[in-house]
Image 1 (tube, helix red, strand yellow):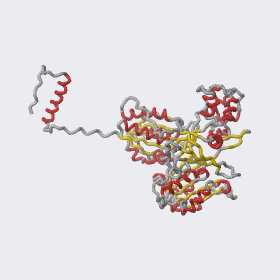
Image 2 (cartoon, helix red, strand yellow; image 1 turned 180 degrees about the vertical axis):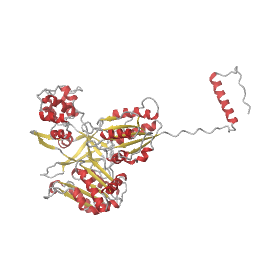
Image 3 (cartoon, rainbow, N blue to C red; image 1 turned 90 degrees about the vertical axis):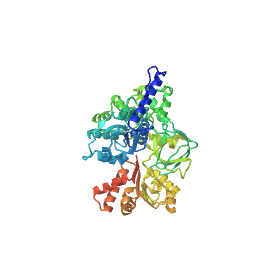
Image 4 (cartoon, helix red, strand yellow; image 1 turned 180 degrees about the horizontal axis):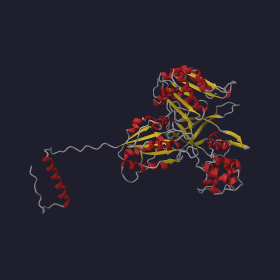
Length: 574
């Protein structure tokens, strides 16, 4: 093929000449290699893989990780999302780019779906990771001593194994969305090798959130515990109206409380302010204290300011020794007003005082209903916190708000907990351990399984102090037992006999059957107090598996870890 020559004085514009020259050059190239007139399209380069891993106890870290993965995909990454416990060390060693979002629960503990990952990562046989680029986002609460400890541990350990940290770890307090989103928007370009931040991601919302709660009508507020009980456990029902609010059994409901006006007024008097004193946002300070500030649990900054001015030898001694347990013991039963009473009235100026307070936070409660059984409604099972101390009555912020002051309305929103769900297999046996208010999600699970027509057997371990006053939902549970929905119901009322009996006691008594259910593919779910009950139940589970399975303690641990990996051992603990 002969390519024509284009004279310099040909009547083409510069752009036309350039286009035509390029076109003819292309023809020349294809003719020279014997190609057809239509060249094959260039193969697209595969997208770079980015792994976004999360450790989440209540769903916040998982939601943030999902948002980060979505932003990464928008940048062209092949973003792969997974819980930390779903990643083996061999898989981690094969990764090149990792963003980790990890929360901390309790006093510096790993979330349940990150514990196995951490045990492997911190082990002496963990692989070297020199080729890995990583960044860690840690979520926590400065109200706890181990603030963001889980994220800090993972961040340091990855560096020890030779991984390359691309950005400094971001530690976020309870108001995490804005700093977390800004951090992700800065880190993703570093992982891609581009410059400049990308738009900050935000977790997906259903429209209602802690910053925009739905004002729900409270249609039921009734006491469950009987007269004479040491506890006040109440059942609440909210009408979801036209909110479009959606939840699943296993989720938590966030409730936005308001502080006790009487407590707020007494605090105002202690700092020498009046109801007309303006607050930091221009509203009357009393209104701000009721609606916007934590005035029950004192912040660390407030404790330190009080210590500096109160001249209380006991408090000064505890703080100077740095003994967290001793400080917790000293603070037990004391609130902000108790601390202010250690100083002369008016020692703190109003503006200085409010600057030492943390923002008022929602409280999350395990939902005790299934939307399939109660469409348009959501139920809670809450223990009201009330006690006497330092010569006056004290109360929990949200539990007494619901019991005494919510009246007909409260701001609510759903906190998804994808890590605590009814088994997807309707034929699988389900063992539930939920003493006290820990029964809440299992009431929802049983309703859910009945609505789904699930054939799997259900076994509930429930207990409290006294059967006569503390057997909450006894009528419902009896009906479930009689109908066959509840295959087994084992009760443990600790103070109805000389020797205390707990749910873990009943587990051990029925160890053979419990192990049999697990061997048949059973799921084991626990809800309630993390400090004592959940640990005692876990120890009993290990013991039962070792005894009934004829295993060593080490082999029993491997068995339990297998249940965790298969998502057959789940916990909703607090």
